[in-house]
Length: 148
Image 1 (cartoon, rainbow, N blue to C red):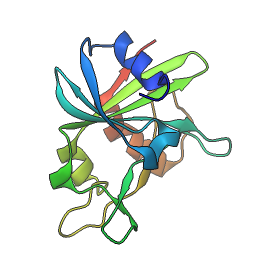
Image 2 (image 1 turned 180 degrees about the horizontal axis):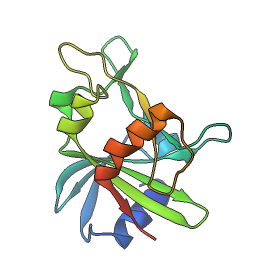
Image 3 (image 1 turned 120 degrees about the vertical axis):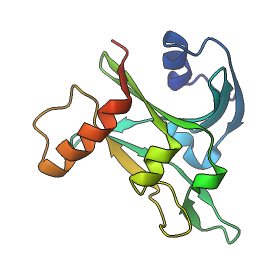
Image 4 (image 1 turned 90 degrees about the vertical axis):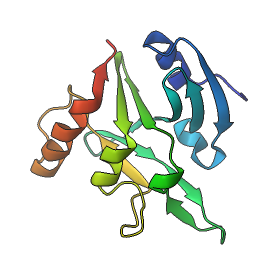
């Protein structure tokens, strides 16, 4: 690894006692994009970022296609889960999204949907959200672990 990842430190605090970084995903370096092997299998990891004008935390995950164009990850190419870490002024949490749920939500690309290259996540501590964000938070929090 080229530098110390905050997401790796959060991972160590939780349940992943053993892991190996298989690949640093340079295209998502700003979000600490990693492909990791752990006792849970192969995982894709990101660190979400707080944005100043909108509630929730933003995270990107995409790859380049054969023509060097950005695209969402394909469901068939995915590891078993996505880990999205949040670390915000003492509030720490982790989402563990199974790929089937990300596909159901239209986030991963498949033969009929183009997927999304970024999403916003809403930990349980986020409040006073608009109706769309509240709906998103409801399904996301099934997969959220508060690390405080």
